[in-house]
Image (cartoon, rainbow, N blue to C red; front, top):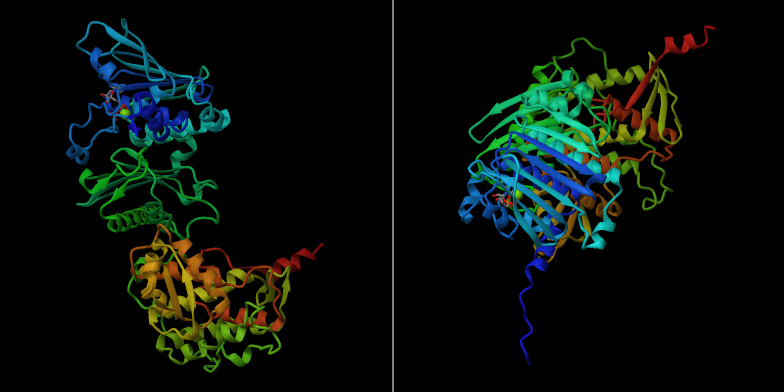
Amino acid sequence: MTDIIRLLPDHVANQIAAGEVVQRPSSVVKELLENSIDAHSKNITLIVKDAGKTLIQVIDDGLGMTVTDARMAFERHATSKITSAQDLFNLNTKGFRGEALASIAAVSHVELKTKNQLSETGTTIVIEGSEVKRQDPCVTAQGTSIAVKNLFFNIPARRNFLKSNTVEQRHIIDEFQRVALAHPQIGFKLIHNNTELFRLMPSKSRQRIVNVMGKKIDNNLVPILEETELLKVEGFVAKPSFAKRTRGEQFFFVNDRFIKNSYLHHAVSQAFEGLLKPKTHPSYFIFLTIDPHTIDINIHPTKTEIKFEDEYSIYSILKSCVKHSLGQFNITPILDFDRDKSMDTRYDSFKSNAKLPKVEVDRNFNPFKTDSFPIDKSTNTKSNPIVWDKLYSHLDEDIKQQNEVLIENEIESSLLFNQLESSHNSFQYLNKYIITSNSEGLLIINQNRAHERILYEQFLKQITQEAASSQQLMFPLVLQLTTEEVSLLQALNDSLELTGFMFDFSKSDHGTILINGIPGILLESQIQEVIIELIEDFKAEIPASGFDRNNRLSIIMSKNMAIPNGKALKEEEQKDLIKALFSCKEPLLSPQNRPIFVEIDDNIIDKLFHT
Ligand code: ADP
Ligand code: MG
């Protein structure tokens, strides 16, 4: 038999590599801009036609190249930026793989003009699909101009796969903005179809942000700054009132390189917790400077994802630094009790309010008492996800264990509730709101959020007081998970156990998890869904430890277990929900900081009839 293994010709290898590096016109933009920055350019112009499908040209006034370098630049693995693998750890440049120009030239028509300071004349090279068509001397200014035409001309499938011009143009602008934000000291221009879209003069970081994002952001920027041994954090966050409905204006730069990192994003979002309107996202421009030895940028070919050695510390530094700035600039509203301080405190001791003297209350009042819950024995528990007796019965136990602080809470809760007692009526509207009244006016309560709050406080109490009840299962439930999911569950195990879960990981090598016990308030039929939801929610973002993690866990569990909107509730169930809600420490806001009820003052109602 004859030998059948052959080396791929270079132009084929380049085309394959191009698939990784060059996904769309904006990838070319990114690579070319980064090369110009590495060449110490002071001014960079980007010219684009038809969203980059016809032309992408970058002109810089950087170092330029010699005749030989100009030719070499298009060879695969040709780079002036590293000479050994060790250099990867001392990287101060954007490029290092020496792949970009070779890849781009494999899938387009490229025309390069370049001249370095020492040369009299410049050189021009024309390459089409990896094939050098010509190289000649030419007259050109110092620096480099690279024009990339007809991208993917030789890969029709790729070309057809490109999105509309509007979409591709958006991607190009995104890349341009990221690079421009990271390098305010460099002047940038972007010209699209002969229209100048951006002209950015060299400036300070803040001015650059305003020039890129628009004037409106100017008065909304709050500076952040923190320097530790591990890293330096600087930049700006936008005030919560400036938060956007779309996630767009969120920029992390590490050593002047734009990166995406959902874990760090989470840290910033956490710092904004309670300050944002629902469904809005904070804007931020955060620059981290960190020893390159402690990061790994080589894990992604287009280098927008990086790995940090000490992610946990960066997370907490970032979070506290953003929080600090928001607080310092008086942006935090009074409602935001500082959760960090409570890190290792028992949940109920937060509320160690001064004693309420001489208040006449019924100390035996217990909003959770089972006998106040109607139990419809005829209801089939399997088909009815809300089994109220089950939902609350074990709380009797909890309440028996209450300490001094809790008794005080109860006094206050009863007070709140007494205001409600004046009204005995409640009814459900749209299967979603419970309408009732107190001495002040009408209350419209969102049932789902109310129940989330009740469950949240209950879980948090259980986890921090270590007092949950667990239902033992006669036959263990079997879950089949991926390795990643198993390790995630193991990481959460300590906290989950305190809510009543009992996992058996002995067969986890094969991804099999046995569940021997579940929280008292859960039904067996809900378990699978809850665990899966939990894992989904925690993927990529387990807060380090302590209160944060328990808090997240409680939020997620309450979200997944709360009665949904659209569920009909009997009158008794409504009342019980109201009672339980007003026994909460924070009945105003859901765990995700959304209002639970609105109050319509009697005066306002009266006024409506004064016509
Ligand atoms: P890398 O950036 O990873 O080194 P590239 O393929 O992007 O690989 O570029 C190859 C080489 O070409 C660079 O290392 C650099 O020496 C040279 N080069 C590319 N663009 C420019 C430019 N605008 N100005 C000067 N030199 C450049
Ligand atoms: Mg490069």
